[in-house]
Length: 401
Ligand SMILES: Cc1ncc(COP(=O)(O)O)c(C=O)c1O
View 1 (cartoon, protein in one colour):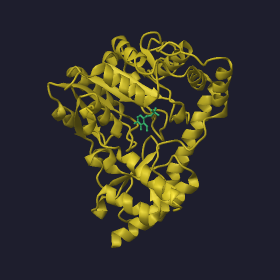
View 2 (cartoon, helix red, strand yellow):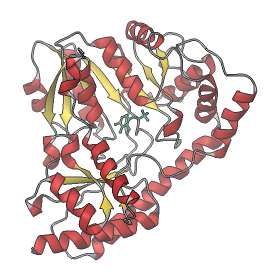
View 3 (cartoon, rainbow, N blue to C red):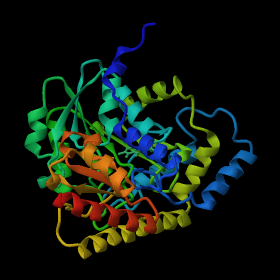
View 4 (cartoon, rainbow, N blue to C red):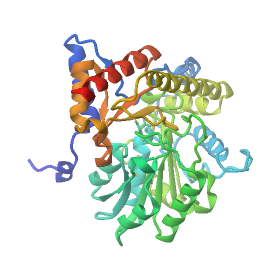
């Protein structure tokens, strides 16, 4: 039978493949410390769960308009307003009626954005390394991906000249994701402004995946919403998954100019109809209740404590083949094992087999990730401490071999 050949271009995500191996070993009874996943180990705050249950009991169990519940869109607009410099939340930067669309999580918001923008053959610039879905989805939609090297020595931020070198007359969009998965990179204001100006000069869309916006350790990341002067070319997407430990609820949003939201609305109507209304009620509560912002800040503080735990353990070890740069945001360490001179996949497989720790190969995120592995700190302190020590012990032995 004939099938869509476009999917031949999409290989199984190496992140999923790594997870499958880890699960298989666990099922076979091996004690594995899994530091591979990007899912908070915290439970969703009970008040958010209660809001969802209340909504179910109140009858929010039918179709609702595809754009999303007005109370949720208002809560999203209010949060976005706080990201604009100097507005203090007084003036909503996005019109909740026309410029915000509720989605089935951040991944769906990205799908809707790309489906709204791309024509077959259009080219999209994506940093290497990046979360795999950024490139895969463009290919799935018959676009062409041009990878822009984000070198470790540049803090994993592509140089402006690298963006320029990747441009062709077919380029229609760039994708950015700060804080970045897997590197935790956060750019300075000047970098972001120059990038937006570059997009303006070449008439490109800027698709900004901000799902880790609330997870930072020192400097608070700037959202593209902080630059209203570029609003007409910016698509901002975010979700409640990481901030409020709500990955399984599947709720997020995109904020963009009305013409793009109009396309995205049709794409959403013709695929999911609407996000479950009780989930939307819980999401509106999460975004607007002051205590939930404190709960989110508490989880951020826990990630900061775990990041410090990793740094403290690292400093107890003699210098060896493993180098690390503290992430500025998100909840991953991108561990540099290039000194071993082996591929990321081999390193990951050996760490899993010989040290019993599950990680993701850096090449799951692109060629520039070769020699790196991603370790999550969205896990318990005990698992992080035991897992990271096992990795360091393994790296010392492997370095001597
Ligand atoms: C960079 C990035 N964007 C988007 C997502 C998707 O998140 P969700 O669909 O749960 O909002 C993830 C999940 O890991 C991610 O790492």
